Image (tube, rainbow, N blue to C red; front, side, top):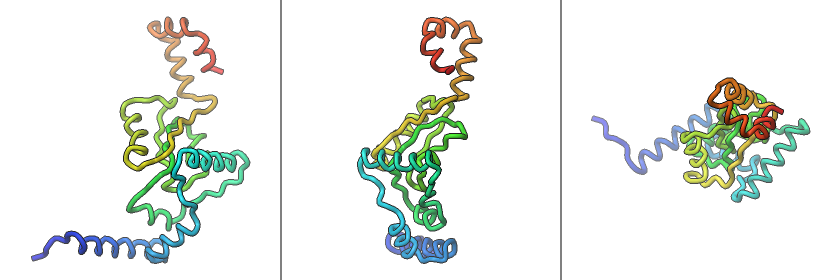
Length: 181
């Protein structure tokens, strides 16, 4: 008859399994994987200002086409298998041309990313955005917009086509005109 593992025995079993997985996936022990990641990855920013500066540094690399693609290797994946502490939560559009992980040149475990068409917000999106700061202590929330958004154009065109929305768009012609440019 087998007995369930509790407390220290279970922790040892999980640590052993993680070590074996780390070795199988990367050829390194778990301790080596953690040391390697700490050596190659700067500590995550603890403040919103530090997080914002880190994202802007990454965005500058995106703009100048000098991407570093940090922390995207098997060792980083193994380290993140047990926990994560992203320093930014990004709400962005579903548009395939502006993936936040690339636009900010970040690695695995750096960002919580929520995407919706036209960056529309619904209760499930709001709850997802709030998860980072409330549960993980993520210091920064970014709402990422972009030019020539197909979702916004489609919503605008659908609004113009329906008589119910036409009156709303006509009354607020100035905001609607800006969305189509």
